[in-house]
Image (tube, rainbow, N blue to C red; front, side, top):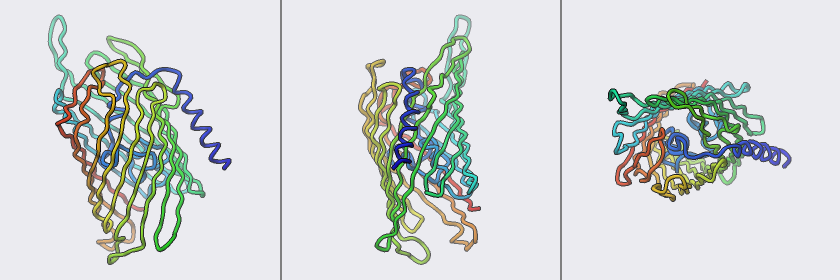
Amino acid sequence: MKKIIYIISVWIFCLSGGFAQSYDGFFDSFFLRQQANAQAEAMGRGHATMTGSPFSVFYNPASSAFSEGVTTEFSRYIPNFGYYPNAHTNSYGVTINLNKFGAVTFNEIYYTYNETYNASEDNVFIHPVKSKLDILNYSYKFPSDFSLGINIDYFWNDYVQSNDNGIMYDIGFLKRFILNIDAATHIFFLGLSCTDITDGNIERGGRYTSKYSGPTIARIGASYEFNPNIKLINYNAVKALIAIDGKFVTNNNYDRALQLGTEFTFCEALKLRGGYYNDNVDTDYDPNMKTDLSHFTWGVGINIPISKLCKLDDPLELQFDFARLKNPGYYYSLANTKLYSESSAYYSIYSLKLNVGI
């Protein structure tokens, strides 16, 4: 009980830094809307208790401690903006679990949207707009199945005659409980995380200079995994996962969300996912924005247990994930440009993950 009180106290202390400046929606699509992989998008847009993916540290820095071996992942997100039809995000991640020395993760989320035409008094020129977020993560799992993790994030954006950059720090906690009851394994996770605990300023340089505050995002979540001891040949017949999260931007009443997600795995190969999120956005600075974003999400995954198929001694798995969902349909700020996301349009996200046991 004392440990739980201590963890919550540290989490609240980290959140308190978020009230230093007010977040006004700067790059909300990059920090709050875009998801790093298809599993997260399909299950209600990411959870504080997700594990097994390098991109899970985006939601909780403590998650990497529960990874196994070396995991690499590539993801491509195609948002299908009407104004920027060629926009896309490529994400790369790798997690290395060093066992008793903890786990290390590196991610890069790289975004670009078509080309921007900029008119001046003398000429008209074309300049590609690019944004990226680099995440360096370290986490450690204690013998009690409790993990603590930290991220160092570097955000960078190149926007025609100006550029933005800033460093942020994240912290997360994750606790796992395992029960073996009635010929089944029951796994519970409880997670807390906080993004940008120091409320670091993002500086704009170039022709126009200024400072912006990124979102301080608090996440609190829980998940339950049901794994009955039923085998088909040498494979687990079925597994079910349910997750629920609350997400809050604490340095302004800008965004509050409830997120639900579920995943069913059959014979360790086919994964069916579904989710729902209700996002309430404060739009005082832009009356054209939709304030209540509520959508169902879905996706599929194909896992190939190579080590079992080829009877290898060391674990080896390859997984492909896919989600195709309807755009939320509202105005929002992206690189200080207002975009309209057509609600009738669909966007796609693909992920490819390889796990090698060591």
